[in-house]
Amino acid sequence: MMKLPGVLMFLLVLGTAESACNSTCSTFCDCSNHGLTSVPRDLPTNITRLDLQHNQITTVGQLDFSRYRSLITLDLGYNRISTIGSQAFYQLSNLTKLRVSSNSLRNLTASMFTGLANVQEMIFYKNDISDIQTGTFNPTPLLIRLLVHRNKLTSLKSGMFSGLENLQELWVNDNEITNIQTGTFNSTSELRILSLSQNKLATLRSDMFTDLKGLKYLYLYDNDITSIHAGAFSSTSQLGILHLYNNHIQSIPSNLLSNLLQLSDLKLSYNNLTDFPFEQLSNVQTISTLKLDNNKMTTLPSLAYDILSSISDVNIDNNPWQCDCRMVDFKLKITESSPFENRITCSQPDNLSGLKLKDIKLENLFLGCLEPKIVRFERSGNVKLLQGANILEQVVCEATGIPTPTITVIPPAGLNTTAESNGIVTVEENSNVIIQNIIAADAGLYGCIASSPIGSTFAVLSTEVVNPVSPPRFTLPVFAGSVSGAVAGTIAIGAIILAIWCRARAKTRFVALSTESDVDLTTVTQL
Ligand SMILES: *[C@@H]1O[C@H](CO)[C@@H](O)[C@H](O)[C@H]1NC(C)=O
Ligand SMILES: *[C@@H]1O[C@H](CO)[C@@H](O)[C@H](O)[C@H]1NC(C)=O
Ligand SMILES: *[C@@H]1O[C@H](CO)[C@@H](O)[C@H](O)[C@H]1NC(C)=O
Ligand SMILES: *[C@@H]1O[C@H](CO)[C@@H](O)[C@H](O)[C@H]1NC(C)=O
Ligand SMILES: *[C@@H]1O[C@H](CO)[C@@H](O)[C@H](O)[C@H]1NC(C)=O
Ligand SMILES: *[C@@H]1O[C@H](CO)[C@@H](O)[C@H](O)[C@H]1NC(C)=O
Ligand SMILES: *[C@@H]1O[C@H](CO)[C@@H](O)[C@H](O)[C@H]1NC(C)=O
Ligand SMILES: *[C@@H]1O[C@H](CO)[C@@H](O)[C@H](O)[C@H]1NC(C)=O
Image (cartoon, rainbow, N blue to C red; front, top):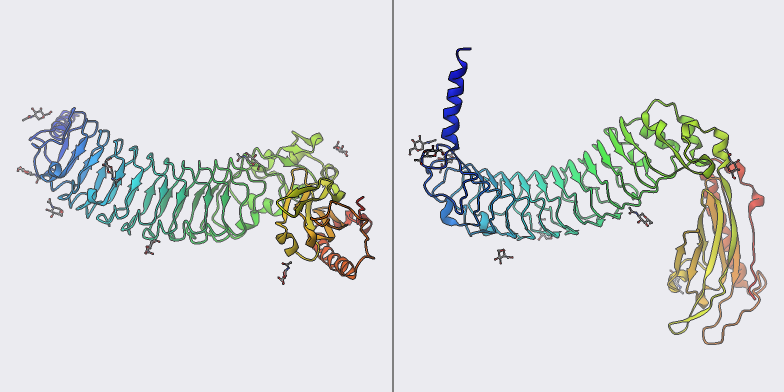
């Protein structure tokens, strides 16, 4: 107890000595909040730490720091610095940490950092930086952490980070980045952490992250990402944390995640995913967090149960689950041993809406499905003259069923007929398939296949295209009798349809519900 005042005294003495901003400070000069408009010139020249935060300094130049050559840490945060003169830090070869956050810098150039050969951390967050010139970091090869978040960068360019061979952390979040050029990271292969969150990226190309072979943390949340190209993460095989939440991602391309064998934390909440490829996580043993809540997912295959139940932290809440026959396999696996199983609430069909999947009887899941049926397969009546000789016309195939069947339209004489006529094939929201802009070469037999997990069906349509130069005129199409080409076409289409149909059949577990008699062979006559 007697010692306490002594300790306090010591701390007080030390405190005053360290907090001085004049010739009496030793080692550390605390010049923060001193109303300074320039860097003081009367401090001991051998100081190693200088704090100049919260002043009104606007410019730093070469003479400001040339006397303080022993500096190891320099903090210029919360000033009004808009200009760092050429070679301002030229003498500071021992500096390891430079902080210029919350200032008014508009660009970074190589001449600013000449001499900082040993700097390991540079902090520039909350400036107005819109440009980092090629070669800016050539003088700072030992940099480990670079913080440029909360600035105005609009793109990351090749050469921007050249020279940073030892960089491990790059924080460029909260900028306005719309593009990352190929090769941007080609000299920063040691990078472990890359934060690109809160930017305006729309597409993740397959060549964006190719150089980041050691990347462990990749933050991409709060962007405008709608599309991820296959192979976007094919080089970043060390990735452990991947945060993609709050974007507009609609689908995950095949094999995107399969090679991420170190993945532990994947967040895809608040996107537009209608489906998640659980099979891509089959070989990922390390995953402990998976967030897929607030998406547009409708169904969960059996494999999803195996994957989800092996992950400790799962969230799949707030998805529009369709509790129909597709969920039967998943439902059969429910043991209520993991919290996620109790939180799957049905959105469709209407009479099961609001109920939990775990509480629904198996037979009621089957009632939610309807076999696919082709209800319309015809040429539309609207005939318009389009750009010269092309006739705009449509072949429409419409099918019903629950779940919504996928529709495939097979044009006559193979696929390049469609390509030649600009073959616009659209799948409308009501699942109509439309082929527009049909020309003479497209005449012949069209096939339409509608398939779903509970079955498939097909129909055939014979068409004849009007000669663009003569007035629109429709003749009675003849199904098999017209020309031998049509017969050959029928056989070819039949073969294709059969092949596809058999494949669809083989995939489904509910094939017993689908019978041969479902198959419609329709020939439509246009008058
Ligand atoms: C240096 O600063 C300290 C703390 O602000 C103050 O007590 C001291 O008088 C100053 N000394 C000189 C020489 O200005
Ligand atoms: C700094 O220089 C002053 C006098 O020039 C000396 O008293 C002091 O010990 C030096 N401090 C260090 C850390 O070298
Ligand atoms: C820089 O650091 C080294 C190693 O600590 C030291 O020997 C040298 O004197 C320092 N340079 C200056 C200008 O203080
Ligand atoms: C960098 O910014 C300074 C001050 O804002 C400006 O004078 C200079 O022209 C800029 N340089 C480049 C290359 O944009
Ligand atoms: C990085 O990319 C730039 C631009 O594409 C190229 O000039 C440079 O040679 C590349 N560097 C390496 C190390 O591949
Ligand atoms: C999701 O996709 C739909 C249709 O593709 C689109 O209308 C909607 O704006 C998207 N929502 C988000 C959050 O991206
Ligand atoms: C739900 O509605 C469908 C279609 O109207 C009906 O076939 C089915 O029996 C209903 N299911 C239940 C559980 O009421
Ligand atoms: C269709 O493709 C084949 C082979 O790819 C080609 O020989 C033929 O010319 C193409 N037909 C048309 C009309 O372009």
